[in-house]
Length: 249
Ligand code: MG
Ligand code: MG
Image (cartoon, rainbow, N blue to C red; front, side, top):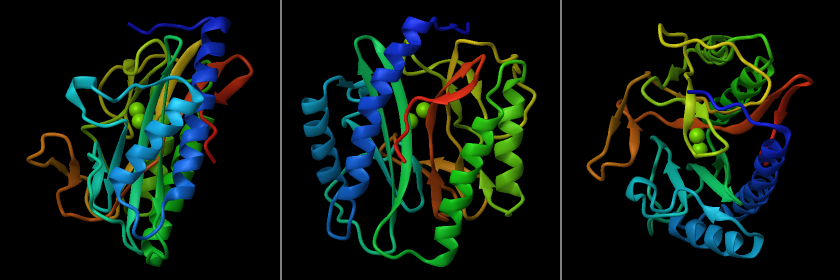
């Protein structure tokens, strides 16, 4: 069931998104060669302590950290660890914040030092596809309009689109209906209404579409171990158009 949010609830999600945006901005600045993903997790907890709110992922289905950190071929749900980032790596930082009962969810892929041109292009195109999807998050459109915009952008460059994981409703919980796939499938295709709040999150591989779960039961990697990027915003669908509630750029 899709839960439409009233103005007061959207204001609450906006406030949560503002905390999350500050955290993702600060974490991006902290990324450099020699920093470990566990360092980033520790820093995220310090920031949440200062800014308020709660790490929505910590303990969710047993997840052991405040952020997901997915390096290189890892697509999503990487667990922070002591591995030090090196120049040429990329790391996706995905974070959910709950503030006063309202949830926001966002992710950014950050280059470490200098990355290869083909990796830089993967990041740019994945980010562009997120914005093309957001542009379609309009009253009267359908979920598939978002999905199609993301998919066309990514496939026009020959990249792989991750299918088993997708965007979602968000706001009163971290995961709500509807699903927002990054491809056009045969699933539910609800019309977009004012008051819907959705997390749009393209996950894009430099190689093929397929992904596989590692033995830690969390980390999802590309099956061909190609580099993978992921950007995410929480977006409110309003009569006035889409509003990004997690402006981390
Ligand atoms: Mg997320
Ligand atoms: Mg999400």
